[in-house]
Image (tube, rainbow, N blue to C red; front, side, top):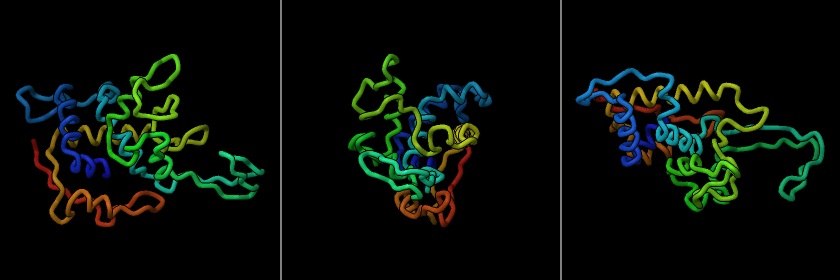
Length: 208
């Protein structure tokens, strides 16, 4: 849901997604009849996938992150964490780290992920300065990382891809008046086990 609100807030980004869907032959309401979305399309919709990554970076669905208990004294970044402590890794904080994402870390800018995809294969560093101190950064922290990351993340990503591609290719979407502005909707989001929109998300849906 956060992705839809962010697209309403950033019309230029929405326009790029719609152009990509049109170029792929998926957009309804065009002179050429659209074709059905296929499995092969999911990996080819580059900009849509960048939008999904950027949404997960700023508004991770599992907002409270991952929690672990230390079994021994552990030193992390110069700090000693005693044994028996509960340590939380909050993606909301990790993924707006300016030391990693640059000074615009709190801004919604899907193009940053296109820069990562253009990284140098021999070392994994980006060719631009969009990312800082990053090696092979391919995903936000929303699903955690390492051997205990989310087992359902592939299915979740596929659902997001199919939902957004289908909705945006079939309909023009507008926030319902009762929701207020995109900024008001985003400011109303609450952090629980998962992100929560107290009012839900009411939208005006117009067939293309």
